[in-house]
Image (tube, rainbow, N blue to C red; front, side, top):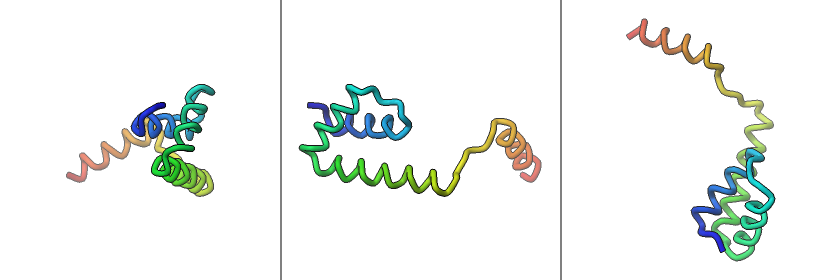
Length: 75
């Protein structure tokens, strides 16, 4: 069986659809036995859904660079 640390890593990969079927199976089996990781997985899934629903997005590289320049200019 995988460790809780490995389960958390796979859970995060699963949220971004990067986990293989084998990893998802390992996570599922681990969650059956570990209530702490099951809770983490539920909360992680809920957070992902809320972020998707809110339409959150990250800044583009161009926007980040412009923001850095503006901050440096103001300092």
